[in-house]
Structure formats: structure tokens, C-alpha cells
Image 1 (spheres, helix red, strand yellow):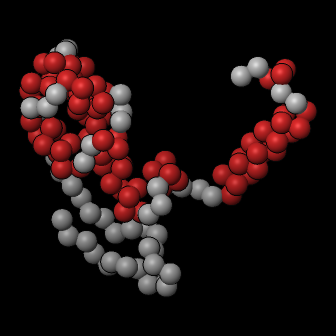
Image 2: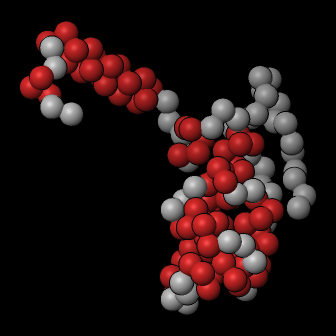
Amino acid sequence: MNVSRLTKYTKFCIFWAIGNLKSNMSAKQFTTVWDAIEDTRGNAENMRLRSTLMMSIKEHISATKFSQAQAAKLFGVTQPRISDLIRGKISLFALDALVNMASTAGFHIEMRCLPSKVSTNRSSKPVMKQAVA
């Protein structure tokens, strides 16, 4: 974008929007980037789990020096699917598919359910006292 070609009004609008965005963002603090992006805590947790699995699988592919075609054969998917994984296209992967891929790669996957530090309902009572996996 050539800034010198923008009108003064357009420049003002851009700087105003950036300043407004920064002030709104600094007003809230989030535990993870997913909490900031997603609408619900459940969606944020799902994205956190998927991103963790995707990064582990991607690191495994790099460490083993597999080509995308070799990795695709190992995981029973297509090469474009491996390309999507490597490029981080998280919305294209379901949690169960990533668990299957990680398991095939030889990972032992553990899941822990811990009590939330923040109440998820509008009352002051916690939604769940103890979670069991």
C-alpha cells in the first residue's frame, strides 16, 4: 500500500481505527490466543488441542525428514492434506482426525481435565467442581 497516495481523511481513519483497536485490546486480558479469538471457551479449548496436535505432527514430519508424499502414505491421507497440516490450516482438521494421525506417528496422547480458574456461567458458583477424564 502506498501511504503517500492516501488522502488525509483516509489516513486519519486508519490511524483512528488502529488506535481504537489497540485501546480495546488492552482493556481485556486472555489466557491464550484462542480465548481472544474464539467466541466460547469450548471452541477455544478445541482450537488449543488441535493446534498442539498439529504442531506435534508437523515437528514429527520434519524430524523424520519425510516428504509430504511419504507422510501422506504413513497417515493414510493425501499429499494436499499434509500440505494443509504443515501450513497450519487448523480449520480443515477435526480433533479426532489429528488424534488418529498423532497416534499413527507413534505419539502417546494424554488428556487431563482440570477445574477452570474462571467461572463459565453468570452466577458466582463454578459450573463444574471436578472433572473426570
